[in-house]
Image (tube, rainbow, N blue to C red; front, side, top):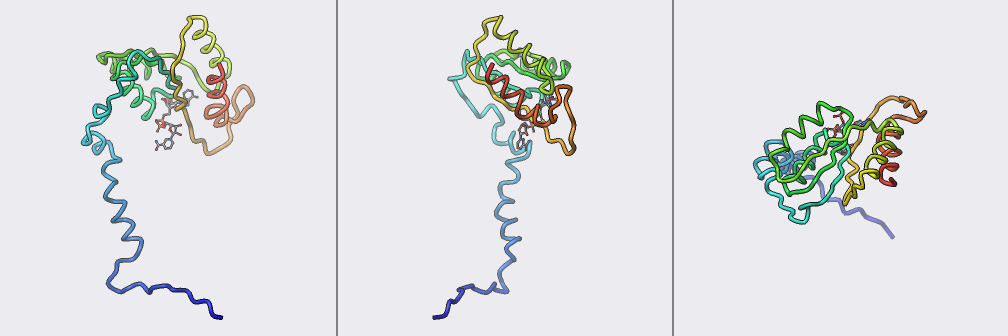
Length: 169
Ligand SMILES: NC(=O)c1ccc[n+]([C@@H]2O[C@H](COP(=O)([O-])OP(=O)(O)OC[C@H]3O[C@@H](n4cnc5c(N)ncnc54)[C@H](OP(=O)(O)O)[C@@H]3O)[C@@H](O)[C@H]2O)c1
């Protein structure tokens, strides 16, 4: 019994597979750029009436994706509790989103510090604020080991441990 591999030889007229892949995926590249996003209507092309009046908490709200989610939620009438570690960036987003039908409430907290997250939870509980949806968006990519004041790896604390504490709270 002989096993034969039925491999069709690459025709000389065919472009190499890498070129074929480039041509295939290249068609979608523009849509993933800022210009492409705007050409497709940006966040205005998404309408979510079910967000109206909802309390949405977004971590990393000063970053690219977090700010875009905050924009979309406030545009649809939600009250966004946006968490960031930089007060100026938070205020700038609050100003930018102020014409929207929803609200953006800036909350300053650093996810590398457990006590700041505990304070934040306490603040929300004391004020009786009920969150309908929490978007754990905060995230960093650290290429070297860095320890937080609490003795944890910085990336572990920011990406997992303190978002977990916030979710539990
Ligand atoms: N962009 C992508 O292609 C991509 C792909 C896969 C996954 N993601 C994930 O998606 C999420 C958002 O991505 P992005 O591109 O929007 O990232 P980004 O622009 O770098 O934003 C990250 C956000 O996290 C905040 N942050 C960082 N360290 C913090 C800390 N210690 N305490 C509080 N806030 C802190 C940043 O605040 P500052 O403004 O103060 O720095 C910023 O608001 C991340 O988790 C990322 O890993 C992104």
